[in-house]
Structures are given as C-alpha cells and as structure tokens.
Length: 163
Image 1: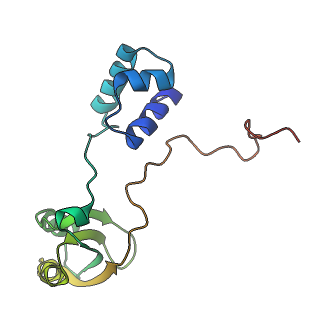
Image 2: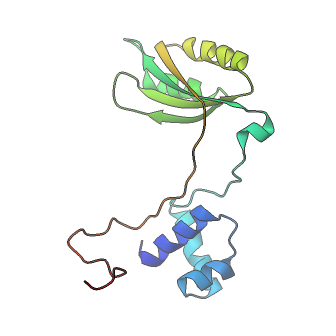
C-alpha cells in the first residue's frame, strides 16, 4: 500500500459514493487507474464494502447502550460470540482485554426493549454477568480517520511557516 492507496482510502471513508472521476482528480491519476486500485483494495480485503450511514433515531432506534459481557469460568468466547452475532439488536461486537471478554453496542427503540435485550444477553450460555452503559448523547461516531502514518516528530512540518 502506497501513499496514493492511503489517499483513496481516506477519500472513500469520507464519501463512499465518490466517483472514480472525483477520486482520480484527488490523487492525480486516470479514472481507470483509480478503478483498478480500488478493485485491488477490495480484492485484498482492505476495503470491505460500501454502506449507508443512517441516523438510528430516525428509524426508531432511539436507545443506544454499550454492554460489557463477562464470561463465566467455563464460558467459551467462540460460543458467546456466535450467540451475540445472532441477536439483531447487537450492532457491533468488540473482543476486549480485562474482566469483560466483549463489549457490544446495542440499538433498540425503547428502554423496555433494552431491558429485554439485556435479558437475552444474560441468558447466553457461558455469560456470567453484564455491565450496561446507556448512551445519553452521541458526539460523533463512524468518523473517518486518516490512514497516513503519524508524522515523525523529529521531521519538520512542511506546512509550518519558517521560523
């Protein structure tokens, strides 16, 4: 992966609907060269898809919670993960370090539905306990971040004015 691939990834993360012509102008290549590079990024598993980002509240999912899941003594991460994947309210699942093996993001319409969902999470074979944090406000999420490596602190910033 070179600097052009990183520019393409950054652009697609900001706007997955950008045309090949727009991307080509951005990186200074032909549309066909950009099409080929994006295809290689997809084939290599770097770009895994293009999705619509939807405001959850606008489709009736006004309650978001983060639920930590602690397995019991004989809880299998694979069994628990498979059960989590089968619960439609679980939008994201992260394997984490610490007492909890997983933190999941749950989206539901109401607090009553959250209560029922937590009950299903607790009923998964191998789950010892859960810890729920209800999200009161989302400041940002799905924010595209740059793919460029961090700047070398010993190298001067080329955009900085001479001293």
